[in-house]
Image 1 (cartoon, one colour):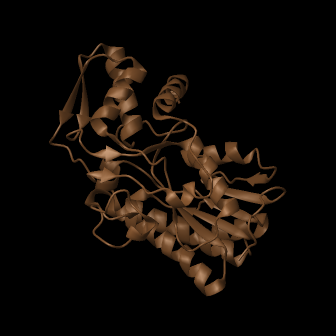
Image 2: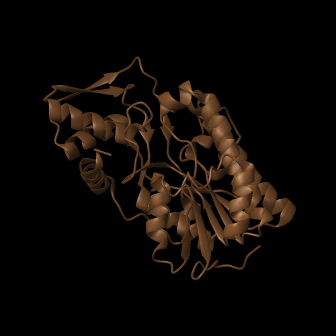
Length: 315
């Protein structure tokens, strides 16, 4: 295993998935670390193709890797396209993790997801809850792919002594998020719905489900800062939860979102739509034990994300 702390300064650091929301935030955050950030656009490297990944890694020779590349989406996308979510994510993570080992990468961080935990796990969810119960059916394929990534990282540590680690972020939001109502997660979907309701003068805003499920939300720039902390200060087989330690009911989130957008109409809950997991709050004791804390509150983060949406919605 690498000595702790792991220094990023003057190293070649590959951010796989740099065009995604987390990848963009990592590139912004790593600018403060004095390292050389490596990226590869899709036209140059298809991460689902093993030979392409092996060739690129052999030429680029990164010393550290953040595996932030993944096919992601909300309940509708996950539930309707399980093959895409399972197969593409398995291909991406196995190609990157195996190639990193082959070229001698000093340290790798695999980005998982809080959906890997059982649907009815005790709250707040500790990392030890992994594989102790049934998954949420609506995103089971994605969760299984991410669990496989976690286990592959642990296997490389055990069999080859590789300093590979994994992090389980909570629900993320912020600049670079996906606002497509067919594939987005709940927070960006609410922001866009509220924006369109305000723009059209609608009297109400429809929200999927009952509004009672509780979720935890972390700004993506806080997530990137936490991931850099883990890369430098964590070396253990146990995955680490990344969150803020607080959750909110979806109904209350909808009201906060409406306020951030300036929509004053009625909020209606469509109970014919699925709620998903009743509650998902992460135990962040391990991360906080490293001295890390989030800096961006939900209300401030919502307002900043809405400003970003307004400035970039044409694209």
